[in-house]
Every structure is written in C-alpha cells, then in structure tokens.
Length: 233
Image (cartoon, rainbow, N blue to C red; front, top):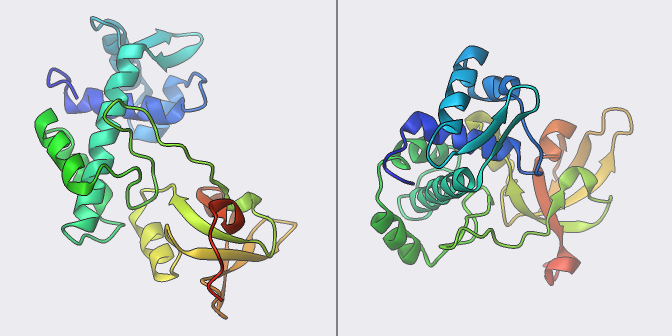
C-alpha cells in the first residue's frame, strides 16, 4: 500500500471493499456499523477520500459510496498484504488461525513492498490464507474460487471445506475445536426447515454437530466430485 495513506484510510478502503464485493454501493451507515464509529466520522472520511488526487472513492450523499479504480488497487494491495501475513503467521510461526487476523492488522501497515514480495516468494505464492480467504496475486487478480455456502449444500453430499469467512476469534476457535476448517471433509446429514440450521459430520466421523444458518452461510465448501477428490472411507 502506498505509504502516503494512513492506517485509518487503509481500514476504510478495506471496509468499503468488503461491503461492495458484489459491485453495489454501500452507505455511510453500513460503514459506521462495520467499523464501530460514529456516522459523522464516516461522512468526514468519505469526503477526504473523495478529495484525494486521484480520488479513492466515488461518494454521493444520496446514493452511497464505491471505490474508484485507485481506491480498488489500494484496497486489494492491503488485502494481499494482510492475507500473506496471516498465512506466514499461521504456517511459519505457528499461530492459531483465530489469532492471525489481529496480528496481521498491526503488521500490514508497516511492511514494505519489497518485504511483501519476499514474503510471497517464501510462502510459494499462496492463493489462500488460513481461513481460505483468497489472496490477490502480484497483479492483484483474485484466484478462481467455485465454492458454495455450506447452507446451500445438499444433504448427504460429501464436500471439502474451502473457506471460513470470519475474523471472530471465539467462533474460529470453536470451529477449529470441532475440526471444521479448510481442508476438512463435511457432510450435511439433515437440515431444520424452520431455522435452516444443519446437522453435519466431519471427516466421516460418527459424532454429529449442529450449526446455525448465520454461520453455515459464511462457510464455503466444494463438492468432492467437483474437486476431483475421492472419499477416503
């Protein structure tokens, strides 16, 4: 990320990026809720970002905000650094997957582009971080990902977990203790038609667990058949 941007600016760019992944605009209120700051502070920052040269956001009070091309490049660069750092902390330094997010948040603002390139080479140009989140490559292009939400997986179909879309430490710790992390095999045994919670098993185990809809829709899986994998049992 360009050194002329402060940490605060970087955090806003990442938040806007996350909220506009589907190509839609987001509102100052959504940003305020996500970042846990006052709406007036968001409005002030959006005006600042819109007045950068080149502008980093397209902000219209009545319509919301999106990233400009320059803002998108900056957000992707910071996202790349963050996820490379998470992978380094997890794979090389032995951090638990629930602890890497906060640490990477601190480090992503201080490493240089040269350090970033060396880190990527050291790790073998990884495409995904410990949570399965995609890592933009050196050209800031995202890897192809065909995973679907676990909430949409048919019953009694074997799949492999590809991504757990969360940075909440308690949730990640809980899921990790249940064996539910990228690379695990999972099967939905039944689905509650009322609250859409699911009963599932991991790695063909006999023990079953229950997962609520809000969590299952943020876990992404790929059917084993589509992944070209074979069942181990």
